[in-house]
Each structure stands twice: as structure tokens, then as C-alpha cells.
Figure 1: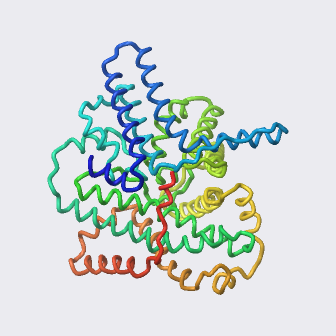
Figure 2: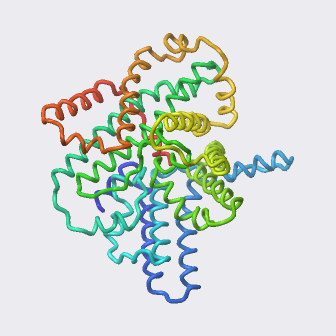
Figure 3: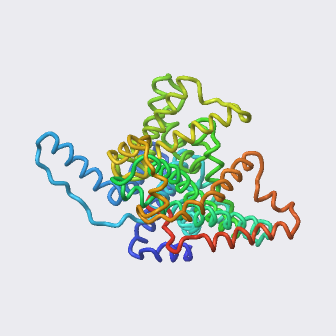
Length: 443
């Protein structure tokens, strides 16, 4: 617990009061829920705990967004109103540990888990450093018992964890950070870009955000594995999905299952009329979009994913073949839809996103613009990514059928260590001189 709190305070010592405060509130609330007999009193406790935890999240993440949105609407109605804004930093990982505390209290309220009376063990569960700032969002049933159990060092577990970390660093430093050099320059100079310029940036951001976030998850899960703790899998080859419903069963699994269990199902899930079912899907994804950031671009991104899933349900397109040509064609279609949706996720404004989509088909000698001066992107920055990208897709495709990292154990020692050395030195040699922070740190 002390190590995890030190880890968090290394970013900003002052904000430790937020995670400590939400931990104390959820800890006391759970014990009260276990001791109280009155349903009314239990409901009061769960409401108060939810308001406090979500209130902290609202103030730091959404207050300015709501204030500015209200002021904008009033301005359109010729009502003068100056937005009130707070000059505060967004605490790293606040959305992640807030959801983890909320799920714990809700599970105690529903009787799924018992309240934890050892404050140190509970605080460690909330603040466990590998997954504190960007997940996975762990459930009580999985992580807390592991924290409470006696640990012994396991060689095989540590080896697997180190392999996972090495692959995560490769994805982050070789693919995501090199792609960011191009993506950031294009999105920062949209007025100079059309056609292939935009197309390349859109494609590379789709890979950047995947390799950035799944790379972080691999590093987090791997480092926990060395300590003898198994965190939940957060990504399972999402860009090989045959439908958008399947995509969300493979992308950011800890978040998608959280929204499924604590929002979608309480709304009625699929056990209702077709109309209500589709409304539940849209609400879930709109809220999911807002969870990612206080900007209408994220809401629009969530709305695209929700709308496509509604269309899949209405047309019966969410059941696809597991293998074969149709599977590959479906995967290409879903990958294309994801590319379009990520444009809104990455853009600063909705108008920027529509500019990109509207100008992406305009013919231009964009590739020449890239390979020469333009915004300073060298040809090597593009070519550096070709083989790593193919490696990512190949790794994920094989992972559909077996655990590639576990399979390495069956190889000869010389071959296995050859692979290790190549990946490690490739990562060191091809990582940019200035690496970028993990994208999901901002959430």
C-alpha cells in the first residue's frame, strides 16, 4: 500500500487526498451496508457513497465541460452567460479508481461480496500501482483475495510477466510513439492536409491508440504477474473482430464489462422490448464516451459505436463466422468503422473530425508531402512502422487460437532467447528520442 501511494504521489503529492478520501468513503460505506438491516438505510448509504465518489469525479473532470456547454446553449438563445470554470489539473487515473470503488460498494450492497474490514488490504486493492492510473479496472472478487493471500515467488509466472512487459514496451515505444510523431503533426496542421495525409494519420492513430493502451495493459498485467498477482485480460485481438459487439468483448474489456454489469443490465439489458434494448445500448455507449473525456467529440465517438451496434442488432449482423473469408471481410469492415470513429476520439472538435472525413477522399500528392518537408516527417518515420505493424496484426491473429507468450516456453532455449534479444534491442533502437505519455493517463 505504501509503495502504491508513493507511486501515485510521485506525479502530484496533493492529489493523494482524493484517492485516499474515496477509499475511506467506500470502505466505511461497505461496512455500514453490511451492518444495517433497513433497506431504506442501505439505499441511503449507497446513494451518499455514489454522490461523494462521483461528485469528486464531476468536479475535476466534468464541471468545466458542463459549465461551458450551458453557456454555449444560452449564447445561442441570446442569453448572456459567462461560464464558471475551475483551474484544476485532472488527477491521473481518477476515472479508473472511482469506478473500482463504486463497483466494490455496489457489489457489497447487492450481497455479491463481503465488506473488507482490513483497511490496509482494501486500500491496496484500490491503489495497487500497476493498474492504478490506467487500469484494468479490477473487480473485488478477482484482485482483493489475491492481495490478502500469502505470496511465494513463482519462476514461471515471473517469466511470463517479463515476456508480457517486453511485448508491451515494444507496442508502446516502437509502434505507438513512432506513429504519434506523424499523427500529432497532421492533427496539429489540418489546414495543410488532405487526401493521403489524412488517411495515413487516421490509420496510424487507430494503431497508435491500440498499441499505446494495450501496451500499457501488458506492462501493468506483466508487472503484477511478477508479484504473483493475475490481473484480468484487457485486450484480446480487438481488430480481428467480426462485429462491433465482438469488438467490445475484446477492447478495454475491464471497462466494457463494467458498463455492462453496472449500467447496461440495470437499465434492462436485452431482457426487454427491441426498442428499449436498443435505447439501453445507446445510453451505455454515450455514457462510455463521456467517461473517456469531457468533450462532445468523445460523446460522438460513443454514439457511433452505439448506433452501429443497434444497426447490427436490427439486421442480425452481430453473429459472424469464426474463420474463413467472411470472417476476414467482416474484420476489415469493423476495422474501417473503428478508423472512422477514432477520428472523433482524436480530434479537438467535431468540426475538425468532419473536416478530416470530408477531405480524406480528395486526391493529392499527400505521400510526397510526408516524405519531404511538410511538418518535418522523415521517410524513415513511415518505413520504421511497416514491419512492427505487420507483427502486431500477425501476433493478434495467432492469439485468437493460442497464447503466443506461453507457446514460447516450448521453443528451444537458443531460439527463445534470440526472440527476447531481438525484441528488446529493437525497442531500444527504434524508440523515439522523445516518448509520449500514455494516452489513457488523461482519463
